Amino acid sequence: MSKLRHKSVRQLLQVLDLTRAAYRSGTPVRRACHDSIREISKKYGVEHQTIHDLCCRRLELERIVDFHIAVQKWLSGDPDILQTRVMDKANPDSHPEIRQYFGRSASQNESELLGTSSEGEEAMETFLVDLSRNDAKFLRILAEIAEKPPSKLIHDILTVNVKAQLKPIFEEALRESSGS
Image (cartoon, rainbow, N blue to C red; front, side):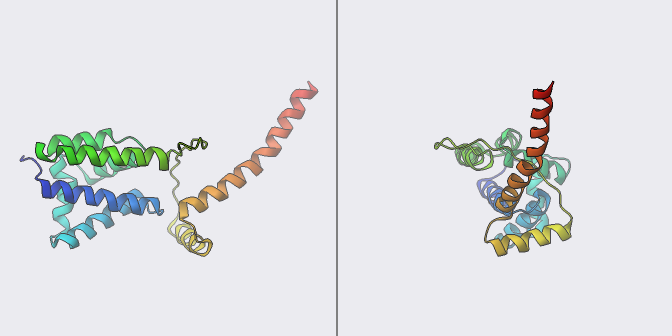
């Protein structure tokens, strides 16, 4: 199979940009990839299948779900599978752009997804949560009303509720340990 030309690499990186933005807004990876592929195909005036093919067959992945998995790992701070695959399939003249892209996105993933910062904030851990379509719809409405991204709203709600539910458990454990 021929190597990816610079234009194809750029289209692929644009799919990843749109996917990341949609994912950060609360869209599941599979849906974010699908919508991003459609949007980039419209932008370049090509069939949806052309960009789909770029993200699957041209990267020598068996199924589009393999692309989704690689993207999910990248979004979770592990770009190795995706970056290696793109580098292996691209013409060498695109390698500097690919390295720069994944270098930039890796630092963004580290600071934004893992919660590390130069200000010494508490490190964060990412969890994937599946919601029914109805619950996801309500979450988006609530997030819009609260003027927060869905991920921030979920964080705020869970932080308060996890602490509230754990407090009595810890208090009980402390009473039991001091009483024994």
